[in-house]
Picture 1 (tube, rainbow over the protein chains, first blue to last red):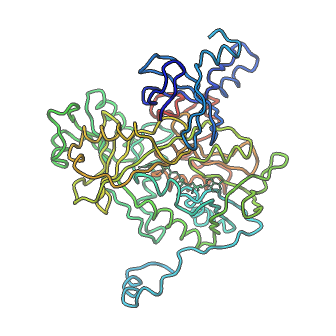
Picture 2 (cartoon, rainbow over the protein chains, first blue to last red; picture 1 turned 30 degrees about the vertical axis):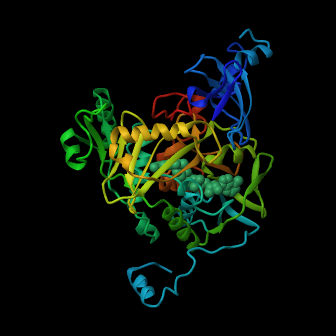
Picture 3 (cartoon, chains in turn purple, green; picture 1 turned 60 degrees about the vertical axis):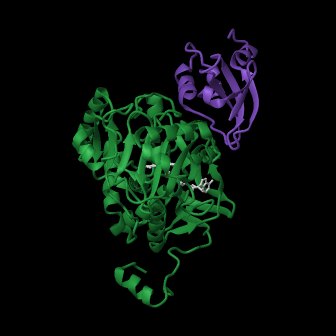
Length: 95
Length: 416
Ligand SMILES: Cc1cc2nc3c(=O)[nH]c(=O)nc-3n(C[C@H](O)[C@H](O)[C@H](O)COP(=O)(O)OP(=O)(O)OC[C@H]3O[C@@H](n4cnc5c(N)ncnc54)[C@H](O)[C@@H]3O)c2cc1C
């Protein structure tokens, strides 16, 4: 499987480690009323779709950036690769 | 029709004309007391024990393809009960005991072969960990045996115990562990359940649940609606997809695990061996092929095929311990989709929806659990109480922090 890194171009997926669902960027606030339930949901529950899935890959053996990869879990086809920092900034976060 | 030596001889001399299909092919009825979704090992075992141990007759198993075509027919067939934690060890030991009596129970030759499993030790701290594990096993009535390098050399003279990159310093053996003919497990349970009146309905996919006011009253299928008093789901790697239809999200990801088999060889490997310095395990099938595997591919997948980096990793493990394997040709490789739960342990529980029950999250060790999983799930479905060996396998353990994290790695489904 090749991952088309936005800065470095196509790289072998073996250079990366995988974290899981890209929603893990959206860590809940520990100060919220429903923090316990929100963290249970965040840490353990997953949509786990058969089909398109946005997920976090870490370029561990490369530039050590985090990527958000949109990949089809049925075919291993990759539609989109973004820098996780860009995705987080779009959501109004600092990094 | 019971199988017996006499019957085999009679058929042999009369041209094998008397064999009948081992189970019926019934049309689905409008209503069953119990519907099991998933005709894999676990679903069929559940049906067998429901009929045999709990006297339930109006039971159906619904399978989208053909029974035994899922993970039960794709795995590397290893059975053992060398677990560590209290939540797990009694359950897997019960499973091993059920394996030991399986063929008599089912009147079916499942080729249960207690050829032994050996986990190799390469460092002092690994030895400490295995001594602890062995003690936990013995405390729970299982067998465990610490072998010295000399013992291992006697049994497996080809292993390099001297100057390998990871010299072998001993091993933890469970002599009652071994392998089972995996397809025969599905067929044997199916035949037994069918003979006790269970309808096994193939080519019938569950496409939805009928749920009103928090009560499940049946399943929508590609062959129409089937009403049910209770619905039990046991669909292995497809748990998230199925339970999504009931609006449930699970503490589970689906991952692919690959397996490999070499060309047939003369007997070289008497038991199952696992390499302790990497992830590689190997046994020899009765046909002579070396059957082996290693890590999961490591990212969510429903593809039923793997990717090459893991093939390379498994083969490196193989060559490190077993250089002679390099001269054998690889005959086949394949992948299966498994649930990977957030603590590496299974879930057998009622859901928050009345009449809807769940059995899944078996990760890559669920084959050995087949008999106990079927028994415990049947117990839960019939009595609404968890079986005593499966009380730790509840949904709420994640929320309450009572996880059974055998590997001690935390909520990392892609590592277990
Ligand atoms: C390569 C590989 C090697 C393994 N090696 C071992 C091992 O050595 N030892 C061990 O203990 N475990 C091993 N495992 C794990 C083990 O195989 C599984 O945990 C276990 O078999 C899963 O339970 P099952 O047999 O019931 O699943 P399956 O046989 O997969 O049964 C599930 C069934 O549900 C059906 N289904 C799915 N969705 C629907 C639907 N909507 N409607 C109707 N039916 C549906 C499927 O078609 C399937 O037949 C291995 C797994 C793999 C992939």
